[in-house]
Image (cartoon, rainbow, N blue to C red; front, side, top):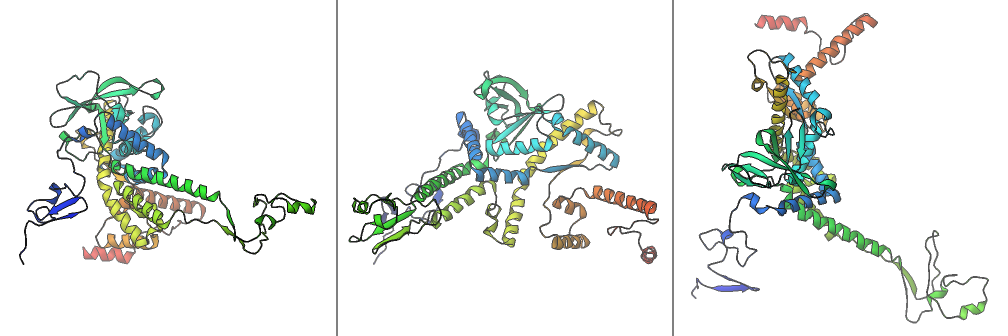
Length: 498
């Protein structure tokens, strides 16, 4: 028996040969999808070319509609914001007095009336809104105004100008050079009534913060595209499926009982007094009247049905939605949440145990690092803008030979508090004692403020307790967290060791 190297076989309407069988060629199977699956695109284009024109607006409208009407999608966005968009500001200069001045300046400029051109949102609310806009719209912009406030520009208001002026190419409202560096932005506004657009002005790139999702190099992507785009169809499918299932369930609830009798059984009309509308005061001759349709009223509490032989009543029960429907819906929701890297245990806390929940949370924490870096970059531009303005108008005085670039500061993401304080605090203390971690990192990761500020506050509380104790009790008030002076023996031992 000999083997034919050119054998062919077919499955349904698809024909295969030894030349097209998986793994038989020296190339990539992904290059030969014909006959197996839908053919992928054969060309690579700039990302903006895929959603140019009205396609970007349709994506934006689709995402906003889902978040507006479907609670699971809206929750997923909010959960993303909770982990990505909350930060605290800390100045890190060696001069503690300068740190206090800088932090006070940033605190003052964070008020809604000094931060938002519309006077509605404070600093943290604006940056949270910016994250929400880039998740749903792909990107968002801020104009840096002369009075150090910011004006929010939504994604669809960055549009191609009426006249394409300038030496560089315009792409979806952005003029950029060959390397993708933005030069200016074309800003539009909404017409009266909120429908339609009116061109306002072009804004230089140095006065504009463009915040969005960018997954390709600058020359191949000028506008941001959100990862939630890949899950919009999943969210809409689940949203519609749940609506259809509810409608089906309501229809089935309209039918309460099934009244059945054998073929030779007596009519059901006499099974219950008053069922056919007769009363006890009526003549007995009425019982000989032609049977009327049975009417049973279950709205007056428990009801007894006196049935004859061969009759039975069954409650109509439907296993709707089915277990298969519920399981598949969970799977689709799980897939949709992956667009934002959100673990399913965040959605369904009973899905796993403590260890599984913590593992999912740790993986999600790692996935937020890139998004937090984007937030830090945006906040850094805003902070430098505030510091420069404060120095120019004399609101902030820097030491001699020190510039704004020399001011050291840090945006620290809000940490996660202890899940099991009795265990995790002990673990943190052991990590510090063994040199595996530091109090600075611990306070950052736990969201308990700045370690230096905490020490200052602690000393202030201890000093006040001692002073108040002397005034009222006649002796210093010793708090249980007051370490007090080192014992004399320990101090002497330390001196001897030196």
